[in-house]
Amino acid sequence: MTKILIVEDEPVIRESLMRLLQRNHFSATAVSDVAEAEKAGLMGFDLIIADIRLPGEPGTELIARAAPVPVMVMTSYSSVQSAVDAMKQGAVDYISKPFNHEDMILQVKKNLQHQDLKQENAILKRELTQHYPLKGLIGNSACMQHVYDRIERVASTDTPVLILGETGTGKELAARAIHERSLRAEHPIVSLNCATIPENLMESELFGHQKGAFTSASQHHKGLFEAADSGTLFLDEIGELSLEAQAKLLRVLETGEIRRLGSDKNQHVDVRLIAATHRNLQQMVRDHVFREDLYYRLHVLDIVMPPLRERGRDIIELAETILVNISKKFNRKPYAFSDGALSQLQQYHWPGNVRELQNVIERAILLSNNQTIGSNELGLPTMAETGQSVKAPALSLDDYLVDFVTKNQHHMSETQMAEYLGISRKSLWEKRQRLNIPRTLRK
Image (cartoon, rainbow, N blue to C red):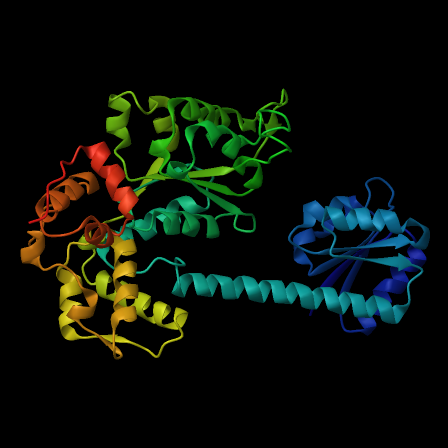
């Protein structure tokens, strides 16, 4: 039987309400103040109905103390504002006195049903979590199971997380999985790729600015830390931050405060930080281009996203999932891979990882004349063309890119190589400059 606690100091109302509830098949207990309510055991009830004005402490004190048990407040007709204030504190509902008996029972049943729905949703969410543990991440290989375990361990904390891995391995998906399983899931996750923001705009992007802070600052601008308040900020490619920006980020992590450009006031933010990079931050620390103190602030726990070439049968599962999704996106009938295509998908080295896999499958669908994707539609270079074996040595992404470009630039165009790497032609040009890859003429 549903148990309801009544907290009312006026004996006539208290006894009348208790009898009303009992007539409607509820188990009702009545007390006169907050202290007696606590002695009755708040957690043993399904609903608490409390007058706001009570001797000693007000009835609103029960809202926090009884949580998650819902509290419905009663107030006199002339004090509706106090009831609204109680709702802001977390009361589930209010009713004005004197109340109609029928209205009281309707509101009690409504709030109990609402509580039942919340519990059912929580159970359903737990069941979905068990069957579909991490939204967006696909694969059952041993290396991905390790990733899932790491995410589970860290998600419910506010610990900073550093996600490592080559470009295109799904670092942002991992960050979103952490956020969605955290206590901050009802709040936003805000993402920024640090490589896409010019150095002179980074501080404004992160911390915001006041109107007039610089020549083009025509209005106030809220930075990403403010936008992510109470939620999560994901900084991808954090290795691209300048030393100056690193110092300011470190200060936020230490103090929990930001200051907009052009402002003389600090403001507190409650943000969980997740960072990611494909670069070797330890080497960058040794090279004095990444702050050691920031590195250790971020590197409380790391998650290493494995390259696609090391994920075995995951490649096929990912490819088939992507094939279905892109078919729906293009409003096409279902496609399937030929045996030859499946074999080629598993043998290819995938330097651009999952992102390259998506690009290859999308191109294959556009080029296909029927519902079967064959090796020709995939258009992947053969092992002979790339100089790669099935058991290619484990290289860093930069090392592999140098090796791939050096071996293939004499018979592939820049556009072709960029497509196979899953990057833009401009990005390939920038990597050539950074890695000092000499350019040779095609034969």
